Image 1 (cartoon, rainbow, N blue to C red):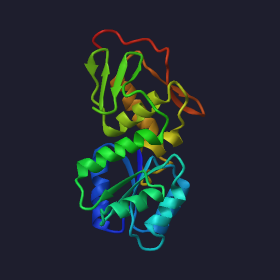
Image 2: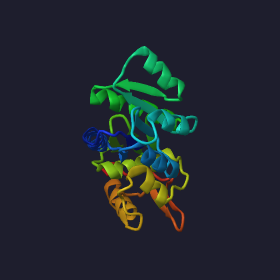
Image 3: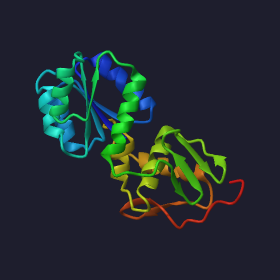
Length: 226
């Protein structure tokens, strides 16, 4: 899941970004409204965590700008009155959270919004004997748990959710990594290579030359013990 945090309290924004990355999310950060608007105009985010009181372009203006598309918005504010919540939701926000808040609650709300930001996918993804549980962040092949890094898990999740469709390296880089990733590196190729090794034989991830990668829906199941 790709997240944008727009928050002018730099210490808070950076702390949230670190925490969400530990949860396996790709996170970009903007410390004021104009930068947030620029980032949102060039990247498709699943969820924007948006402070309402921002320097430059206000959080209200930015919310109204991005509302109505596939990106979901959760607004943060120091005021939690009913009037403020109603006003925020009226601007197009999908959720509203008053400061201070508990980080686990923010994570739960982001995950809930993220499920609404993309076409619905099954809660459990399965292909060729591989079972991926996004909520538990587990991968099992033929009864054996496969230990994956966060990036490997993210790549596999995006590929399996595509249902056999080809996913480009650029899309994988955008959905699983964040803006700090170098688009000219071999990061995606190396991650797919290590993912294939961990999943074992027979392989389920095809390379489509010049296009990207896909999980074969008709791939044979692994032998017992793989």
